[in-house]
Image (cartoon, rainbow, N blue to C red; front, side, top):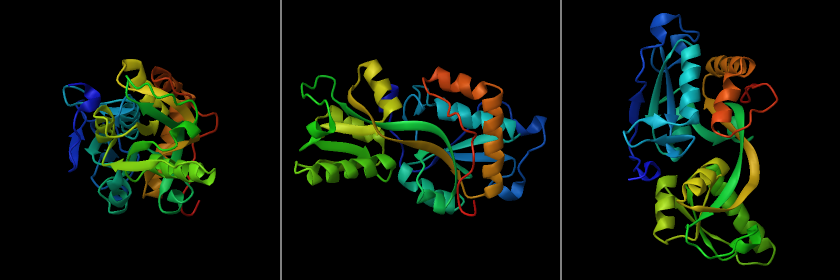
Length: 276
């Protein structure tokens, strides 16, 4: 079974780092009062987006965002802990203090920044993927008129798929039918089974699948926007932003992004959220 097709459990799964405890070698830079578990940075992720976050054939979490989160925890002298959960539960879980940090590539929006602290750190855009043997010619958004598109429920991608539907109908064309799934693994499984015409996901993921030959990327660069990590605690958000700026200054952020074909934004990382 390919790593991208590994099933994702609907219930939360806690995964801790396999390395030695970071907190044992230095003093935590965030007080326990700002954490749900003393000495631990608890992060939520939905690992269905290779190469940024996924589960490999051994069941281990891998990807750019996992590496970044682990390094952030290390520099804060905290132990990294990941809770694997569907995207739709991310914001309610953060508000309910089930985790300290959303580390799943959540897109930044002004509406989200009204209810939580966000640190934009990565630029992404939307792609459309089709089956590898598809003969349908899709060269522009107009060519999606009348198609059925699969997408993970509750995220930026679903919002943009519905925006695309409105744009097409506003231009007098047939819209798109949007089918939502609990996660992107299920959306791509539906595409493989011929249940949808395409899947709406982010550029990095669609490129990865295209490179592997799993699915063909036909459109990319749609609706560009910033991706962020998110928090309830302002103090924790400030501490993470400071660490991320240190990583940018010493070149480790660029090295990580280069490894995955991403660009580091020129501006300093800054927290945006209530009271900012």
